Length: 88
Image (cartoon, rainbow, N blue to C red; front, side):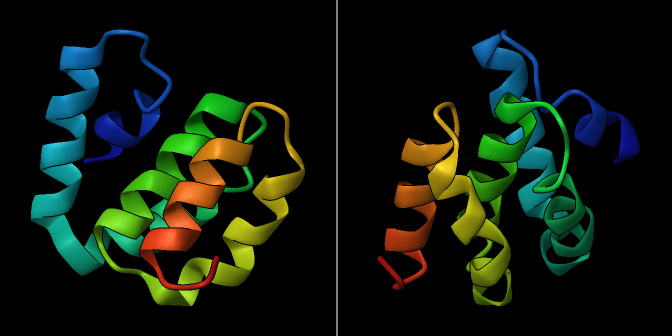
């Protein structure tokens, strides 16, 4: 589980799909670590965490996803996540 979180910044799309599947299987247990990842320094990790939180319907993360709208590399993922969570 922790290894999957560490690899959120992978550039390999197949690896990311595997990580996404694994974190979805963990369900609600993935939400807190993904929320923490929204504050990561790496924009790719932040963007993917927002995407996964939307996949998990983690409406409690909306306030933490909002600041990603200001990031050049995170804006699109944040918009997507917020629209799927019903807040865009």
